[in-house]
Length: 125
Image 1 (cartoon, rainbow, N blue to C red):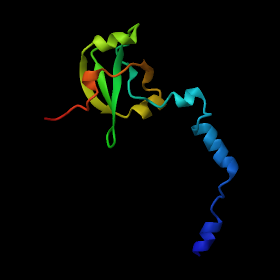
Image 2 (image 1 turned 180 degrees about the horizontal axis):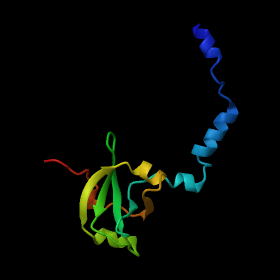
Image 3 (image 1 turned 45 degrees about the vertical axis):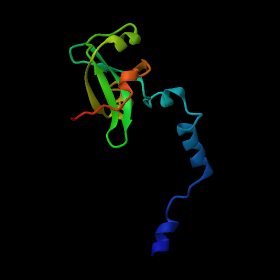
Image 4 (image 1 turned 90 degrees about the vertical axis):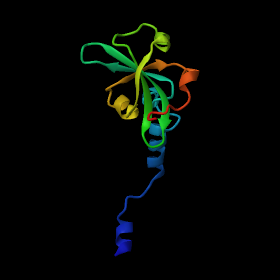
């Protein structure tokens, strides 16, 4: 009986592996590859009051995911580097990859994480 189930399983083919490699590997389109957030990415957040918020992806936690430093900005900025001089409002964990893939937020660019924010913050003291 167990062997019957094994025989009915779909066979893995080289064509299937080739397609998966094209979709996920180094030959994948730039659009698909750009949706994977990287440390330092500046996240653009549409606000309900027709404004724009920004955050920086500073750390990836093994269990909780992306840690964002949310800036005290409520309007679109022309030069993303200006954000490094803006104080941040709060730091939070956020499902960044899913939000980018669902186009809830977008990646506006990438800036180096400032030295003072490179150490993983102590959220609760």
